[in-house]
Length: 142
Image (cartoon, rainbow, N blue to C red):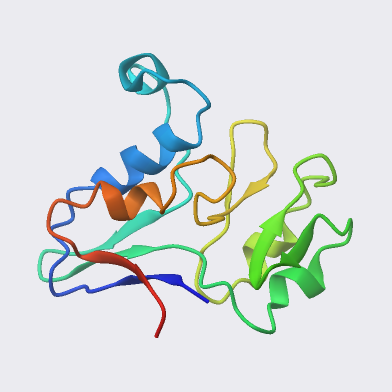
């Protein structure tokens, strides 16, 4: 299965992956209307310091502890990737706490959100990959 991988030696820390992710998952066709003046809720986040930066997103683990810890059954595995059913999430955020990679976050409604590889929003490939100017983020099988 293809996954998102980050080559941290190429990451500039520009955060364009975060903007592209937030836009792709906003449901709005105009980036300015979707993002300008609004708090961003990307499903990927850039972390690092002056020496090294890297983007953090869901690794779609084969035995995900987040799925096991979900009390409502909102997190599930579909076609090899970890997905979330927003209608079932109760906002307990246990999944956010147990993820060893820090890949889950809270959306504007207070429920959990995570990378689903942009397969639900018709991007074709993850928006973070498309928007990375330095090709530090790749979508490939390893």
